[in-house]
Image (tube, rainbow, N blue to C red; front, side, top):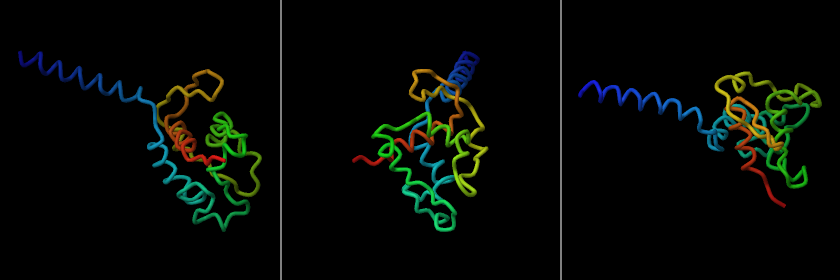
Length: 138
């Protein structure tokens, strides 16, 4: 009887471990990453007024206006490509640093708006989800 209980508990723990990886990252996960990696330049509120902003050749963008600058639509694919480093060639000066640690870890399905699920690092998706929640409206 005790063996069945132990085996049942072990199975439940193993299942719980599997379920955790399937949970999609949310804005709160992304907010923590933003504060650790982005706020020093973009500011705690994402408006481009972080501690390092004045020292930069090209001031950081106001991240709360991404959707406004794009016809009130949040360009998920474009923003993901900036975050992951693919679309940073258009930045003058030292630009945005690369955050290799954000590329590490498990992958989750990400839909950039084209209806296709692409395996993407969990941390990148979390950061994008957070950025989408801080968008200003007209």
